Amino acid sequence: MMDNNGNFTLEILVVGMIIILILGIISFASEISQEKISKSVENNNIEKTISEVVDTLINDPGTPINWEDFKSQRVGLAIINVDETVIPNSVSYFKLLELGRDYENLVTKRIFNNKFHSSMELIPYETSISSVKIGSNNVQTNNVFSVNRVVKCDFFKKYVICDFLNNGKCNHNHNQKDHSCNYFKVFKGNLKKTDYYLLLDDSEKLENKYSIDTTHFKSYNSKSISNTNIYLNNELKELFEGNETSSVVFIHFDKKDTKAILVGVPKDFDKSKLKYNYFTTQTCDFVINAWS
Image (cartoon, rainbow, N blue to C red; front, side, top):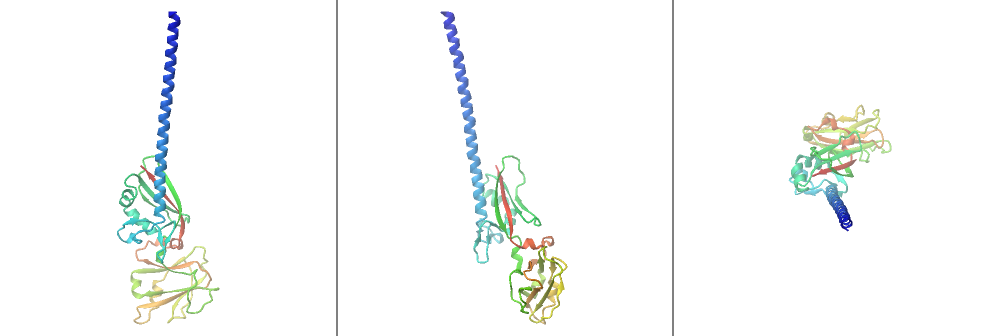
C-alpha cells in the first residue's frame, strides 16, 4: 500500500508540475501576444498620425496663406491659385524650403509635439529636377514609418511672366497656327534687379527663330535659337525710347505651340536651375518618414 500510495503521490506531483509548466507557457505566450497586440496598436496609431499630418500639409496652405513670407500661425504646404483657391494634393516649393529652415520648431515641436523625429522628401518624376529633402537624417532605429503621397509641385513657377503655349496678343497679327506670340510690360528700373530669360523645353528644335519688338519697333530682326535659355536684358534695354520708363514688349516664335516661357528671376538666382521644367508644374512623390 505504501508503495502504491507513494507511486500515486509521485504521479500527482509529476502531473501537477506538468500542469504548472503548461500554465506558465500559456501565460508567457499570452504576455507575448498582448505585447504584440499593444505594439501593433501603437504602430497603427503612429502610421495614422503621420498619414493625417501628410494629408493636412498637402491640402492646407497654412495661415496666413503666404506664411512663407511672414511669421506662420499655422503651417501648410498646399499651393494657392491666383484666385486664392487651394490646389488639393499640392506642395509649394517655397513653403517646403521655409519649413526646412526651421524644421525643429515648425515640425518636431509644433506638428509632432516632440513625439517623433522625422524627415520630408519631395521627389520629382521629371529626372532633370533635383529632389529636395528636409528634416533629420539621424536615423538610429529600424522602426521607421513612411507615408507617400503623389502631389503637384510648382517649383519656380511664380517667376513665370507668360507662357507661349497660350495664345497671346500680337502686334503683327500673326496667325497662331504658324506662330506663338505673347507680350508683357517691363519697367526700365526692373532690369537692374531682375534677369529676364526665354526658357525652352529640350524637345524644341533649336533651328526655330524668335523676335522681340514693341509698338515702336515693329521691324525687329528675327534671331536663331541656339540655346534653351536665352538672356534678354541686353535686348530689352534697346527697346526703350528716349525717357520712357516702361514698355510693352512682344515676343514672337515662328512655330505654333512653342513649349517656351518668359521668366523674370532675381539677379542672384541659381543659373543651373534655369531650365524649362523647373518653371512648370511637376508631378512628384512627397514622402514623410518618422521614428520615435
